[in-house]
Image 1 (cartoon, rainbow, N blue to C red):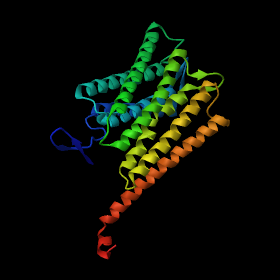
Image 2: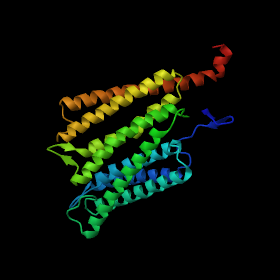
Image 3: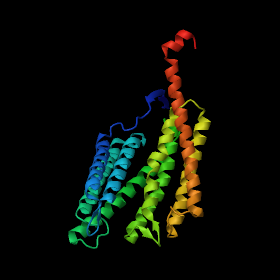
Length: 305
């Protein structure tokens, strides 16, 4: 895909930026998280997940997998953020260092039987390590706000407008996830009321980096009208955002998002609406692939089809 960038004197054709281009260190960091998660899953299968007094290896598994996927998502979109090389390099290495520290503290402390964030059994060094973990979390929040501002500042015409639209919605969801993360840091806990769990809101909010960007990427490659593509992205993304808001309200009230009450049911319906929009994007993408295959099928050409 190429586009025309206007200058004062002439039109210059530049290729559209590619996902992941130049981000091998972020990709490698993301892969490390996934490999750690696989190794921990094998350990849990043979040894179980609880290590006294506070350790829970299943938390390390889910955390490393989530950070790995998150880092790969950042690696995908950073090349199209429009940063100058120096700023891009700074952001890249801040993400890499933060992710590596997070992997280390989450994994090592849980295997030592300690809560990596809010330990009541560890010593002074463990408390300091947990405080640094909190600083790292705030650094990641700051980086995500920086990226959010950058993507909303990009001026039209965009070389990849559908992808930019999906990314903007994704960062709005991530903003709510970051608020949940700050809430956990301030409370020194993840639970609210009798059954509310902020980690659910935090995790679902961050997964917008996959769930809202993937449909936009699929629609880039389909042959439906641009108007329909934009409508589908808005439809699915708004449904996702509203579901996040309802989950936030339910959690703030101190209730589980998995109970069969009004807010969780409405949130589930909205998530189903997002899923339908994503399925339509996927089907459109697959139809284009089949059409391309038919166009180059020699048998079809011989038959005159």
